[in-house]
Image (cartoon, rainbow, N blue to C red; front, side):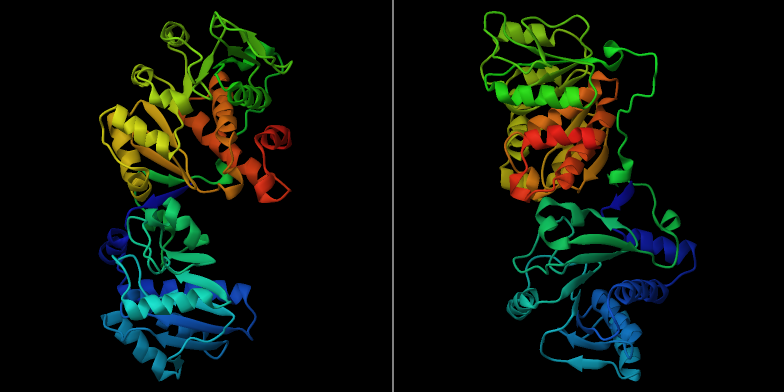
Length: 466
């Protein structure tokens, strides 16, 4: 698990004031980190073009050109004349050793973007927009210096943003790298040290990046056990029964000892897989609930009240976010809600928190996750998206391991089942959300077929391969 920060200028300032470092030293380490990456991954015969701006991001790129010159065929393209103190200093140093400069973009093996950094706002002017269009058409391996040029501090993107294969970000991870929109442009993300260990450079933050090594699977280490030892998940059998069946099967496959699909008293249950049980009332030994997947109008308000008339841990998804009953659920302890963006905007409106569009939400996902967690600290929010945000008691976790393979009906039902299965086994709401989400994205990565062919059934089957 890594830390994520809104900004790092305050962390740089600590280096100056507490550790006796200076801007020049930090910049040399940043440039050396980029140079080391290039030397480790590209042969000495490679051609490298570095596009530099007028500020300190450009200065990083100019310093990089000096470190690579005479080992590589390096050229710098000054998109703007250097203006910052460090850019002017680095250009003087580069010219003193004869670094090559160019005025036009040409084909190369490696293209480094050092045009603008985290201070960029708005849109590029006409000339820089045209340059970015040309840059993105060049067939080269593309490296972003710190962040892709055109990525703003809140994570939104300019019209013509640099599309990187990798972002070599300085000092620490920035939140802007993890907004859904940015995922198309940042590529792989690697943090470079700035002369001190990240353990010293970084301070406290409520935001964290989840990694696959953080995953803890529900392995059964207790020898004296039986099916009741591993919990009993009760799933509300919805009008679209396939959704709740998929949730039930994924929960069972993920270790829940028993799974029952609960239907309304006066309804006739659909035919279920043999491994799932059905009942028209909540089993007394239930240890967790799952509600909302394909729910529709299958439950009367009375039967829904009976299903919720307890204090059991619960995972809520899908249709329940459009019902007033969700207000009651949010007052419970051990609650997980897993809305997609449209469902979350409706929930925010239902709770009279705000009335926003999906577009507004997606541009400010971090803000609205923080706002919800401030008002409902007892609830664990899992906000679906290209990068999943998990929020609980003003602590936030991002799972950036998701892929487009998961963009298919039923994927969310599997996720809810994974969460419910862990809740039934005694995981806390937060831990169930974290480990189920990591499992969900790992299953997608394990799929060996084309990414468009992944189905919920594939994921359920692959659970046994974890």
